[in-house]
Image (tube, rainbow, N blue to C red; front, side):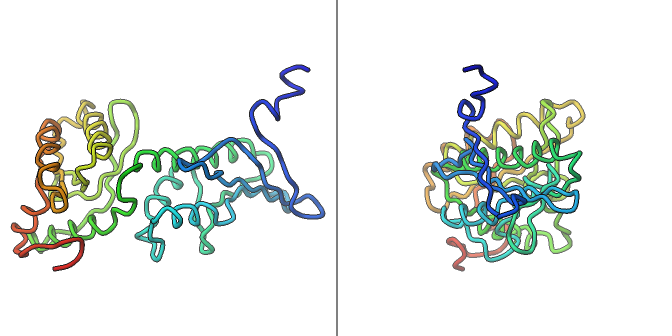
Length: 254
């Protein structure tokens, strides 16, 4: 048995038709999320067009992992990661990518790249509260209170010296803002991201404002804050609240 004749079993890809005419199929692949769930790959062929989609599987997966999906803000990370590859989150909650049949190979590559990006994001969040939306909302509220004239620029993009594109949470009067918890994986990810951005010559004037949530673990946040000082200006969340004139917020409770 040669590699070519045995390729399907070697790489773990199997195609299962889902319709009588064979126009819709599911691909069983080796792509998996961090918890072992299969990353969904479905294919539909109609009128010279091919659609790669997830049948809503990605949203269901993250909902099962504790991510709130009640609004677009909650799934913004999915939209941003998929948009980089031309994949859209449609009104039915499906990730999909349409292409002409002749462009199907490139479209499939982009769809798979989206799945890989999402699984990588999930791995980076292992052990971290899966929904950081609330913290980001609180940071935005504080920044608005500090500077009422501020016009939020959400998700500004920066290119690192590696060529990797990154999105921070806001641009606040010229500083890139990133809101994080003191979890070691989150801190390591933030350091790696900010170092890559700062190392690019075109970003010589770049300044980072790191909002570190110290409310649940003040000692841990203080320790991680010393490390983060090397890549940006660190503000504990409690200090941000004081600057904003708030007596204190505890995960959304004033």
